[in-house]
Amino acid sequence: MSAKKQRPQRGDPIAKDASERDISAITGMSRRKIWQAKKIAEIPEHEFERMVESDDPPTQPSGGGSPASQVEPPRAEDLPALRR
Image (tube, rainbow, N blue to C red; front, side, top):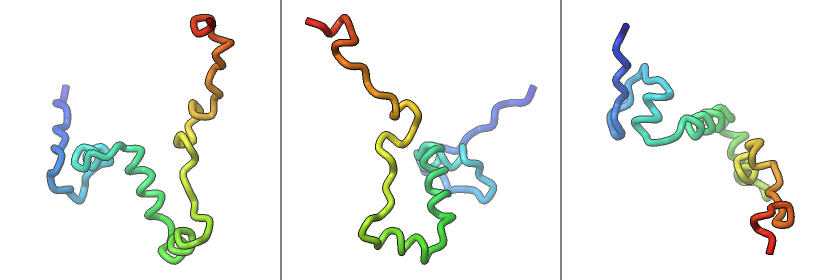
């Protein structure tokens, strides 16, 4: 059985062959934030500038758009412990 790969520590230099997990460990960013940054970096510069400078710039959906954030919270009357 092979030994686990030793991940770099926060603040270490980023190697050219660094994986997303390595970059996450070095920068302290989550892998999701790295994925988001890569998606933003894929936008051509002129398109990015047009979007950012517009009167209605794009925003991230509240709650990050995860399925869990789209579920309505329970109402107090639906929870017996909260009824008084």
